Length: 150
Image (cartoon, rainbow, N blue to C red; front, side, top):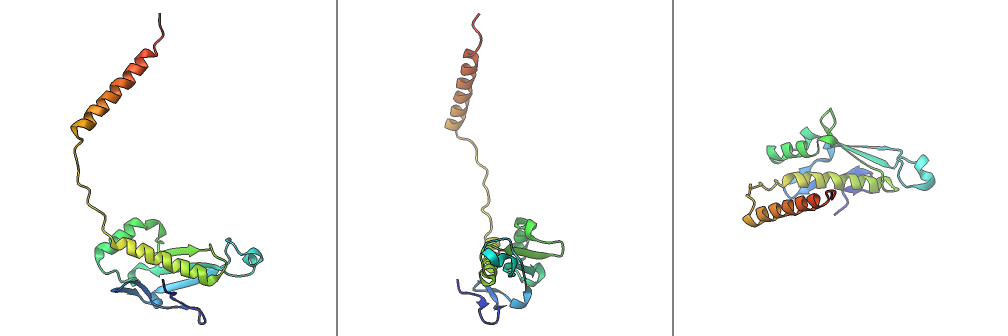
């Protein structure tokens, strides 16, 4: 994946989700804070934890069902203000944590594009019914044989 982060300017380029779906950089809000992840002595000195916020209204979902699927699937990541919140503090640098946040947001959005398979109800086969009954019969006999002999 190409780095959407410009190294010198510390700004984010537009986030390409698919060939036809791009999220503008203005829709993404980035905040850095002190993280508890790895970093040695730098943990207490540098703001390496990255927080990425994006308003759902600004994400410009390609279809309404994709947005509905996203809201349903990742409701725990959506704040009361209607923003998606992604936090990363697994790396020692701001740039890597920001890159991780962007990659995770892209993965969530791509997963929302895929419609779940429709479950077709099936009926148990005759063999599976017979095996179930035989297993019950076997278990019953085992318990019956445990009885105290008089």
